[in-house]
Image (cartoon, rainbow, N blue to C red; front, side, top):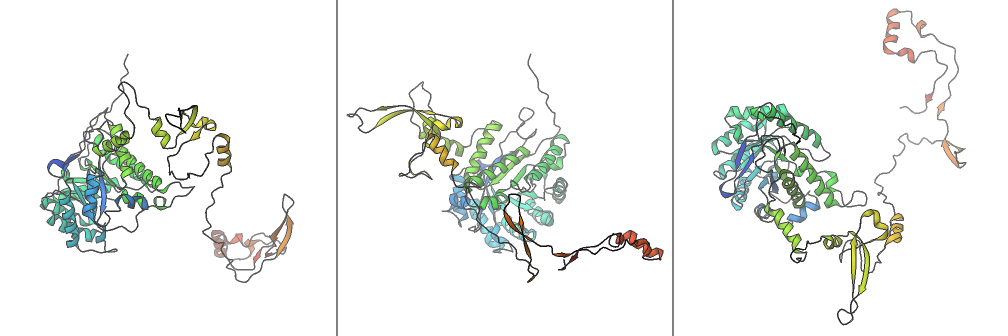
Length: 501
């Protein structure tokens, strides 16, 4: 008999919001169940990815993030076009970081013209993001709303300190806003209520709960997002039925782990950073994120494939293009014959074993042989070898290929990684005090030098009754309450320091 799984009924749903304009407008939200719970409800739209674009050349980015955009850094218009055309961004997040009063402090008029140029250059929705200074953002985003009238941009972050000014701009120019609060369900709901009281409809509000990066508060973000989504779906709390935006690109890539160089202990720097961003993205997706602000193209590609596979969505064009380019390398097989991927995997350094070798006829291919190669598992590594493409890192033409026991012995005798010394022992702050040493023998019989006693031995004294020190009752109670009796107790000596603590 068929097994029927119990399904939860939800009383609420997430509002559907229309972003952008024309043919490239996007729909976000609309869920009637928890993230990817398509067996219980609907998830009509896949989460969208906004690629982060700065309005000036960043000077503190990890090299892995600089490399994909090196040719467009400092030109936000060209940068946004590349993110749209080459990396298939669903949206652009234009970060007006240069307006920060503690940084370049660029004026609002200049920032607004940059926002207008970017919004005009691309056909996808643009999120214009301030510098997170409430007063400066109120000034800058107000000017942006005026200059970009009719472009249907999204502005943020809107916080409690500037919600009245920016809420008024959203009403005047029919803008969608991103309401930002510091990882708290009550504060998120309160800001939505305040914006709604100003007149901003809840259908024009996206919630930014503030996202921590992997290892830097991500689990706290997840729990708060989860509680917000539970209140929206199971308790039908209409003030929290807004889509999520998770702005974690900078939170991930500004960490020391993402910026540390490659080394034997931490591994490849680029791969480390990409995985940190991708894992952060997947985590917030499972908490209900509708819009992800990301940075590295490879992390974006991994997340797109994950969303397509888990949610049953069609793979985006950028992912299809990358897959098609990968398949183009493999020669087409005759009809009815499946194409093997072993040859492609061997080029990447997979383990293999030569089963049989046969010389080719001299008149056909002199000096050449044909080999039958079998792909093997790690457990069989002792019998196999690893093939590398020409010019692969760590392999030179003159270096002999180690196989079997030889490779294992080389790996065993590989020099252990030792971190460079970055500190020196602290000097004794006690001045010119000289310790006296004495010779001792350790457990192995080796001579060692130890510091001699650096205290004066206690002098035996008669037992003293602290209760008889003071006849006054109040003084005796004071000693009891303050534990002074510990110092004047029935002791037989003490240790005196030569140097004060």
